[in-house]
Length: 138
Image 1: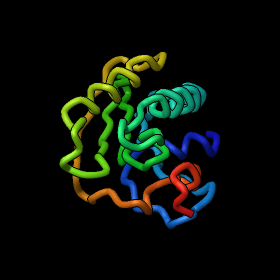
Image 2: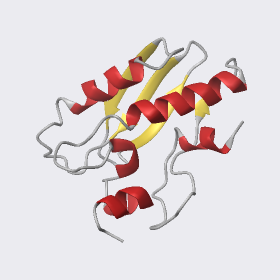
Image 3: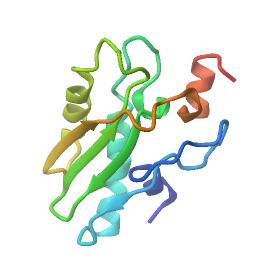
Image 4: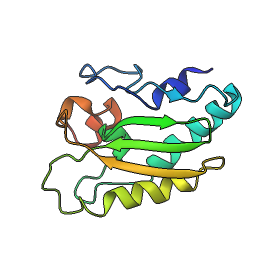
């Protein structure tokens, strides 16, 4: 599997600030899915997640570090644990639907469940270097 596959999914630890190319999340994937399918789905899922933006911040949710965990089971059902930059975010009720709709557009995904989690709380150290540059936080 390629290094890009290591950028999607489970048991996320807070990244080091300015971690550069270090993966922010590691996959938890069903054993029955061929590696080349996992690689393609991962790449497509990252692209799909990068189309969803927090309306108050001009950075996508993937680069913000709002995706905490992604599981893809043997039946190609996707479960995403995500958070918000703040629990009182005005789009808290809508954003999981945006993420679900984006993920459903990935070829090979059968079903999508998005869970909103608040532990651990999000903080700016979860942002990628790209997000930090976009927000002038370097």
